[in-house]
Amino acid sequence: MPGMTGYDLLKKIKESSSLRDIPVVIMSSENIPSRINRCLEEGADEFILKPVRLSDMSKLKPHILKSRCKEHYHQEQQQQSDCDSNGSSDSTYNSSNNSRKRKAADDEILPQTTRLRH
Image (cartoon, rainbow, N blue to C red; front, side, top):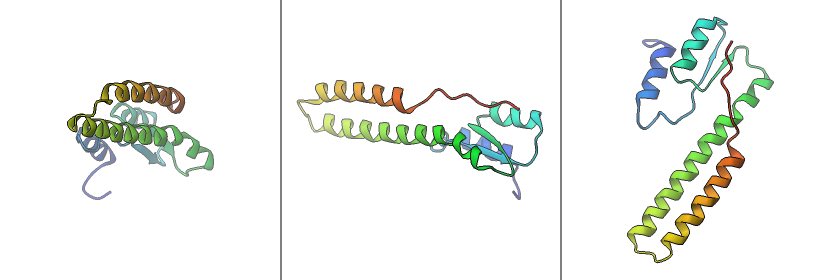
């Protein structure tokens, strides 16, 4: 990458309020534990060694699901906000009902993930 290291890019992404929730996956051919650990400590969600294998793709699934769940959550919050501003009388019921659905979805969709340390 000309003009910027991968560490610099990772730092900029994690410092940005509009980008920080995007999962960051580092891919490198350098199998150097100190560099891998630095990436993970600075906020990378996953580190994959090149050449990428098909089995590595399964490591990405939890991060994709997490992103989709957050996206869905933000859409629900916006809809709830719209309902509240319109004075909907059912907003209390809808809010508690959506909260229960969201919790159930979070428990089902978001598996506990761990970061691999090499």
